[in-house]
Image 1 (cartoon, one colour):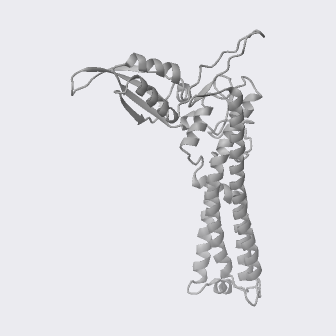
Image 2 (cartoon, rainbow, N blue to C red):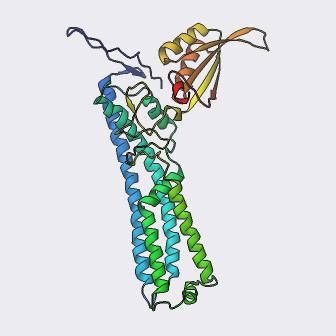
Length: 362
């Protein structure tokens, strides 16, 4: 698929008797105007909202499993004729399995939520505030996520968030229930040695069981505390702190850029997008570079090169681009010079116009 756009039309006063020109996308011979584009984006947004809701419901389902099994376990354990405190320990392991399942589901939920947030912050919100157009890298970020889906959050952030939101309280209830079952039922323990004797499970002594419980709960607390500073989730509503703690300053839907312009989505940075460096060896460098400048709106640098096999001089064009532009680059190079030699390599970081501003790292 080849998608081309005309250059942005500057805001000017147009007489009433002159038709208003609109940017047009071409796709397999069809011409898509702005109204058709908006309709397609609205349907796309509805589809992404539907998928996010499905995974949101799956998160609630896993939490319901944990709550129901915890209630049933405590009821059974407190039955003096049937229950044993070991069932609470087994249920704690089952709750941990539910936590890992829910954390993985949270990754998929954040994938769809990230796309909907891109639509909300840069498409719908841009309709309400000046300059009434999406951010420069909005379409690039959304297209890259569609072409090469990637989880916007890590498994550790997902674990920490689900733990602090729901499972920490379930673990606390289970721990308190175990202490009551061992130390109070059927009769209160009169000494520490009696408590240790009751806490034993099979060949495991009471000291070993208590040590294992303390280590487990210590690990749970450490995970909850260590992941508190991770703020890549887009489906969460975070508090607005006065100090940013190294993160972009929080606003209603972004932060002010260094030029005092549009607020950008706080969860998306231009540097996150995959950046590439293309080297094009071609004998038709003027035609190729002209199309890259005009159609892709990317800068091109011409280098001089010599083919050591033939000994002939060949111009080399160097162009920085993103992953979604590779297809268009190959198409236009093939159109102008089918014999060209193209190398596309990943770039660690690209700073400058069209990418991350150099001033941010200066």
